[in-house]
Length: 217
Ligand code: PRP
Image 1 (cartoon, protein in one colour):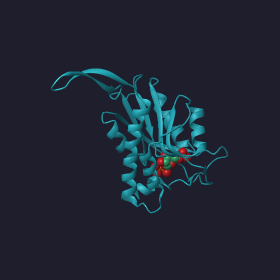
Image 2 (tube, protein in one colour):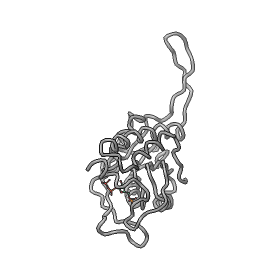
Image 3 (tube, protein in one colour):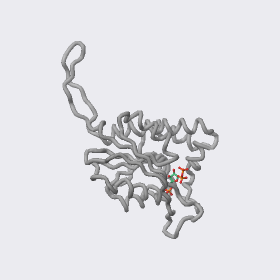
Image 4 (cartoon, helix red, strand yellow):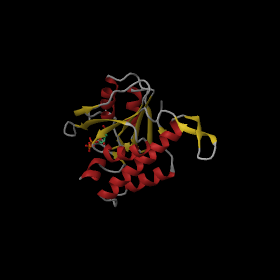
């Protein structure tokens, strides 16, 4: 699948606040939570099915509409910047199972000639993933895509081909989207914005800076 933009006006509004250098730590973290919630609602609205069910109100019988598969959602938190983002997603998917992966770029090694960073993975704890599951791998930033590809290798290692696989980022660079799409064509890439480029240090430009540092510093 190719990248799909999350176009909700409040998503764009919140991302714009995150971009601003004036937004300090607490507001930045809250903005990531808010953006996660909006993205969760947008995934439900745009990517999930509903079914009609018989319900009984206190007064009469009628037909209601429920979202299918809300009990079969797995959210993967890519530490550390994804933590507030995932907190927001959980408001849309309160019964989701959660996995955690600590993955980071080896900034000292730098970008190789293919535009990739070596990734060190320090901790992996994943729930069982079944064929009925909708898996959402969340990381606010998709820059070179090196981190996401390393994460997806782990996530899919023991998984039984999940029903849906979403890679959700707030902000992406074209190179990262292309890399993840090439290596994981089964994934649907969702992002609020695609920025122009990466700088020589592999930072998204104009971007929003270092999301982990801005949220946790
Ligand atoms: C950032 C971001 C992604 C990664 C994206 O994390 O949260 O995980 O970089 O870069 P890539 O697409 O080029 O791999 P970072 O390594 O700064 O770790 P942090 O979340 O702990 O700050």
